[in-house]
Image 1: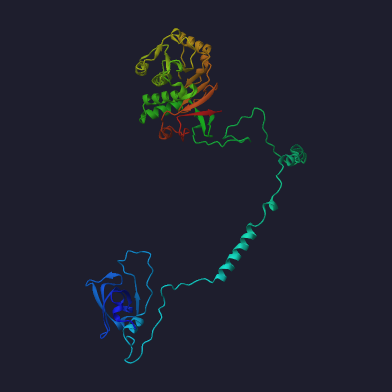
Image 2: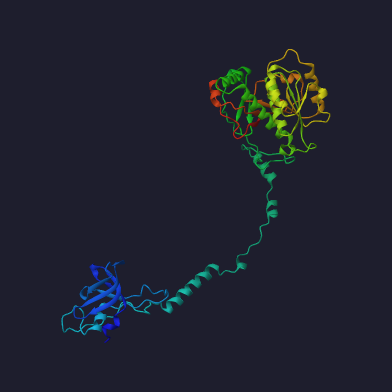
Length: 447
């Protein structure tokens, strides 16, 4: 039988039932009093303040020899578990806690080094065979067994006589709608449908019937009605009374005309410092509000390196503020056709005609219109009205402001510019208004 001194210095873990779990190094074993002294003791994982503790043998329910916590070896194996009865049996001739003279019993530990449960080899082989059988059943078929012939599209298409099917349907008397299209000259964009369909019209702008004219539609299906001159003047007067000044509106109109001119000139590639590649524009402005729109647009174009020639047949006091700003750009100012560029220009912007019909048209105005028609340059008309067509200018694009006017000339493509009037102003003027511009300041209008 081993001496008690064999256990001195070992690290043990003691299960004392309700008292808890104690761990520490065996410093002394008192056989006579059945006491065990632990150094560096820990109770339920927490260090003991005195660093030592004495435990009575009768309180010990289980004893396990454990690894030294200070040992740096991480891969060492655990020491086997030894019951406290086995420890006492090796140290004394009687079992701890039993009556005197009754021999103790050696109890085999529940776990010990090398104890390892193993799966029988026979079961492993059976499982492997079962998995192999399933894999063969699922994936064991040859590719040649499932190979099929390629589908012959031409042969099967030849079996279908589309013309005969349509004739049979038409002769059956059943109501049948056949939508077709001309295959020749069919050029569709990526967002256009082959089959024709009516666009959904959104009528978000409602005006009083007595001031309502022709209805136009934007590219996204928003209806924009033309309004009378009286209603448009009321909207502008209301906007000025509510804080949107006439000068602000002119500036917005000039910016819309500038954006429109940028599109028709071909975009940013025409805005260059190379004088041979710079676009050339002639702006014709009359002595009225529409002329102020043209002068403002000419200033924005000149600021962007466009060769601009501004023609004003007659200067008035009302034009001086905008004209003075334009002169600071260094661009040309013409008072007659003789001052126009000798070379053909890229664009002509027309604001010669005002909304108030003039009793007498100036000779310089008629000469400028004749020059523009002979120049063959495309013409953009700003804020046209029913009087504009009487001048005989051949217009390719027209730009209405805010809302189109009743009687707006239909020659060329019509566009609508946003002059910054809020919906509250329209509401005050008796118009239900939802902006048709979305993320743009100029939108195209179709009949």
